Amino acid sequence: MTETRVTESRPVLSRPAEGVAVIELNRPAAANRLQPEDLATLVEHLDVLERDPDVRALVLTANGPNFCAGFDLRALLAGLKSGERVGQGDTAFEALADRLEATRLITIVAIHGAVVGGATDLALACDLRLGTSAVRFQMPAASFGLPLYAGALQRYVSRLGIDHAKRLVFLAEKIDSDELLRIGFLHERVDESALRARALALASTVAALPAKPLAAMKQVLNAAALGQGTAAAQRDALAAAFDADAIVERIAALRQRGGEA
Image 1 (cartoon, rainbow, N blue to C red):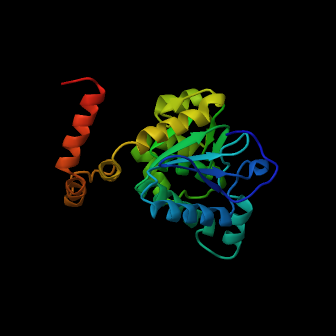
Image 2: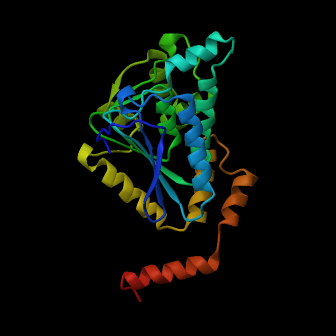
Image 3: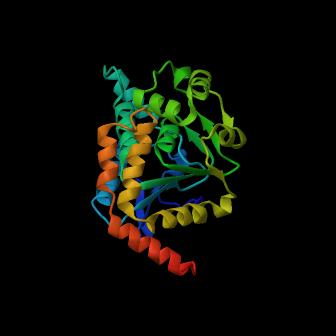
């Protein structure tokens, strides 16, 4: 996962296991800073995966020693200098993170090295976050005087709580993996050599479960983070995913494998 290859490219899509896809950022020499074309490619990959019912879990990771240093500031500056109130990269990052958050796929991000700027929001948009002891986090937008886009601020609060969100956003501090575990940014810390295997194992576990109920519960959990989990639309999503016959069959199969009567 962290072995640097010579050729750099847009994000790479692969399918290493049944029901599992991997998207790997692949600009290691630039700490995987994302270009506008990278954001477009990530959306294209999501389009492809969401159309395929056989894919149920997605691992987001990166080639090289760092996960991602956010959006390329040169592209952001180009947008700002052209007279845009909000840079194109800022808007595109928000759209991508929103898409990751809303996808029916269960998403697992495997983080190593630096996770900076907009990349912190991409990580927060994923369902599960794994990292190594070398993870270094920073949201530097405030130091640039750049108002962070609303979707990121909402995810910071809904995932980490208002107090941690304010600290991370206002102070632009560099945070290590111990603190990221404590505040809940990382769900689990693993050795670097085991990061890929652990992420794929979790993805395979998820991919083996019934997809429709998981997608419905993800939808409602995300809505619940905003205080909307009991709305009629969320109840309808759960009801639509309820299949009594399939539940009976799965319970029977689980009991049989467990040796129960």
